[in-house]
Image (cartoon, rainbow, N blue to C red; front, side, top):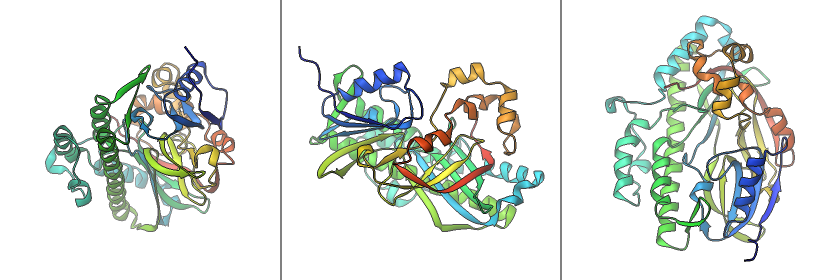
Length: 380
């Protein structure tokens, strides 16, 4: 039996690949119809397809190369005030508490849910079970943060101006879309499954995934507006929406690359066409960056989406202590009561964001550097 053909693979790495990551990439590049794989410097192991990977195909769609949190992404916006105002512990504590009330990790009470935009609520989904999930989970999870690596962070740029950066996605809705369509996808080897974009089943996934992206974007916008209300009440600070940057990093889209139409899947990777502005977060406690894409064709016009995990969550909980969290978060306001729950999110559990930036110098250029001032993470 002939060896399966290997697609083109290009890598921008911040360090050597682990054997498990290298094996997962090799499986991916030999999968049917995979034309090109680009590996970002924040690459790390995940179920079926690594995070920090871009995959191009001609007609097959791989839901696992998008992931469950479809449309997960970033939103950043500046405020008309100085970040130094949060140096006052009482002011910072009030803002942190206010954000916690305004942006819960999850909601249980439908009466407290925020209204969703019409373009989100009225778009049809492909199956009654997804419509039911939208009515149930969508109503209560809209404009909630979730947990894990999702966050709301207030930052200072080089001039001391206050910025908001937030990270969250489509919550349970994206997972429902992925799971529903994976059940209808065809196995193509190992654990990978695919749908053909030329079929009704493939088009149904693409339409539902597009809706999940819109839901996630609308949810981030609503969260930013809620944080804006907190900062208006606490600091009399106004969001300057003309500065807003919105990107996502879990999606699939039909794009033109070197004269070909390709289905480009990004799982933990941000689109970075020439001149396109993006948001590249560090871990909590480390710098973040606004960047401008360079349109590198070998990377399918893509960039890392953040620092990327250095340790698995279980490994971080074994190795990171409460003292480590305290030391690594020095100078950043956060809810100290939840320090134990945040050990797997400590800066040392992530790669060095500066090394990630250096590794992808030909993918993006840095336009703004921001340091964290206050970080809020949802804890269940």
